[in-house]
Amino acid sequence: MSPAAFAEHCAAPTPAMRLFDAASAGAYAAAFPGDVAETVLDAAAVADVFADFVAGSCAQMPPDPTPTTPKLFTFQSAPGLRLYSGLVPAAVQQQLVLNVVEEYLPPPQHRTNVHPLYDLPAPFHLFGSSETTEIVPNPSPPPGFVPPARPASLGSFQDRRLRWVTLGGQYDWTAKVYPSFDRASPAFPAFPPNLAALLAALFDISPDASIVNFYSPGDTLSAHQDVAERSAADLVSVSLGCEAVFLCGPTRDVPPLQLRVRSGDVIVMAGQSRFAYHGVPKVWAGSCPPHLSGADFAAAADARSPAAVYGFAPPTRHGRDRYASWIAGKRINLNVRQML
Ligand SMILES: O=C(O)CCC(=O)C(=O)O
Image (tube, rainbow, N blue to C red; front, side):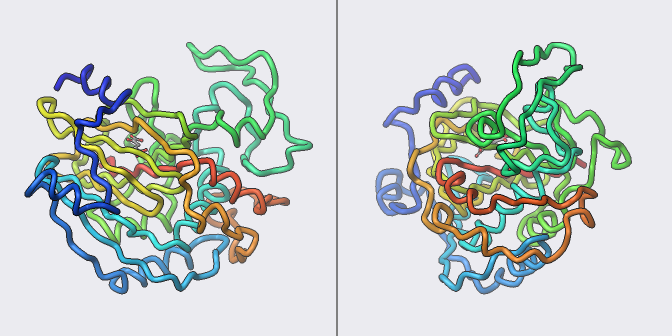
C-alpha cells in the first residue's frame, strides 16, 4: 500500500479493514483465524513499578483498589506490534493526567504547538486563573509562522488550541528532526524522571523524548513513520481518556491493522513494526471512562515542588476541580521514544 493510499485509509477506514477490539477479541479471532495471540498478564508483577511512579510524582493521586486484568495481544498481520490492553491501572491513569497538566506541560523547556504563535506564560499552567490569563501573540515568531492578530483565552487552549507538548528531546515538527542529540543542549532537556523510570521498567526503552498529543473528538493524526530517532528501541504509546482507532501498516503492501485503543492501553511498536506507518483516524466522543471523567483530582496530595525536578515555581492556583471535565472530552497520547 502506498503512503497516499494508507493516508486515505486513515481518513476514512472501511468496514473491510481489520478492526481489533480487545472487548470482543473472540469475534476477531473467528473472523481472522490465527492472526491474534492473547496472553493474560499478571498485574501483581508490575504493581510495585506503578506504585513507584505515583510515589515519584510531585502531587500524588490516592490509590484505587479496583483490580485490573491486563492482556497482551500480538498480531501475525502486524509483526512486532504489541497491544497491552488495560495495562495502566485507573489510579495511575489519573496520575498521568495530573502529571501531564502539572509537571509535563508547565516547564518552558517543554515546547508546544502554540509556542511559535503565542507568548505563553512560563511556567504554563493550563488551568491557571482564566480571569487574569490572556495569552498574547508571539512578537517574534520563527520564519514561516504568522502569529494571530489577537490575544487568546486560556479556555481556548484547554479546548482545541493545544495539540501537543514535547518532553525531553524537542522534536521539530516542521523539519521532522530533533534539533540536537546532545544532552547538554537546551533542545534536549532531561526527560521527566518518574515517567522514564516507569517505562524503562516495563519495556525495552530508555526514554529520551515524548510527544504528548491532545486530541478532541474529530481530530485525526495522519499516517506517518517515526524515523527521526537513531535508536530502534521500542516506541511506547500510552493512551488516556477517550477511545480511538489506531492504524498500523507494517509494510506498504498490506492494508493496515486497526486497533481500538482505550484509556490505560499501551501500544508498543517494536521490531518490524518500529518504523511502520501509523495514524489515528478517529477519536470517539463520550468514551472517556468514569474513573477519569469522574475523578477527584482535587484529592491529590502535594508531595514535592515541581521546582525541585523541573526548575519552575509551583502554581498558586491549581484548578484541579476542572481537570475531570477537561479529560472527559479529550484523548491524550504519550508517544515515547528513545533517541540514542
Ligand atoms: O495518538 C496516537 O495513538 C499515536 C501518536 C503518534 O503516532 C505520534 O505522536 O507519532
